[in-house]
Length: 354
Image (cartoon, rainbow, N blue to C red; front, side, top):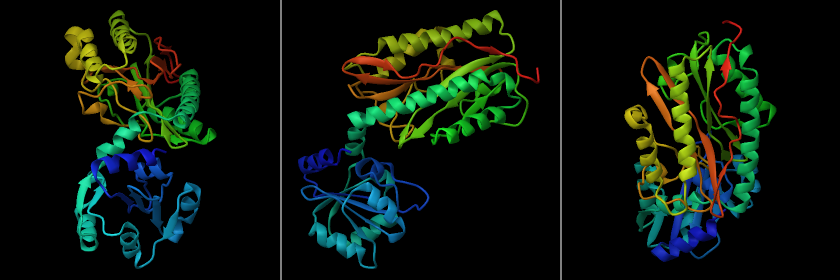
């Protein structure tokens, strides 16, 4: 979507071309998907000054045609084809995080060039979304909100965490989407483990965390709601209210130009004596990957127009309980738009097995 912007960055850095590849037949390279709308096997070559092109096998011809990119079919001499098109480049940009030592050795046999990591250049392009991306993201959010609302509305019918997970997966099929990550359904003491795997054991009294998102037209959502199975005590109500308060205050505090780390620090302070129970980042970037951009790692990442990310504070008490509330946030023309419309009021449920 922003391949021309990448070419401009390559020219500014004095890099002759960027070379991206995917050698996994059942997976995709997110950056190839992003830049070329291609999710198959093969190579994406982005010269700094000439037309970009794909090199891929005949078995992926459907993906090649859908991409709309210029392409060449992969044959025995395909490396020579790439070499001829690039005309002896001096500097080649690669994704260090997705470029194996084996691949580097192979390419060094064909190119007498310096290989430079351009991972951050591409990540920078992905941080802010285009109008086309925004349209898709809003549609994805609408589908996600509907599925979660239906899940909570039917919660009394479920007997196990797997029942909840199964319902969400069936809803994905009905909506012609797929989960954007492994669905989390955690009841009883299980929410104290943020990445709990749903089990076939009966749903247990206490907080139940439902962490769910979809992948729609290549873009991800990620939403968490916590319901209560049974009747909560006053203390449990207070703990839930604390997480909700921190989440809402953090969203209200978002401003263009502030560092994302400021929000993270703010949330920790708001938790007061419970800050040590908040064991992960306040959120992460979203896009074609469910964990995207440098928000999680770069303390100096500033909030900009077009950014799409989560706000998800939580508290975790080992062998006792856990609570997390997560919304998907989009920044548009200086305004903070909460794309998640599912109610955050604590819902108390009594399933059939209670």
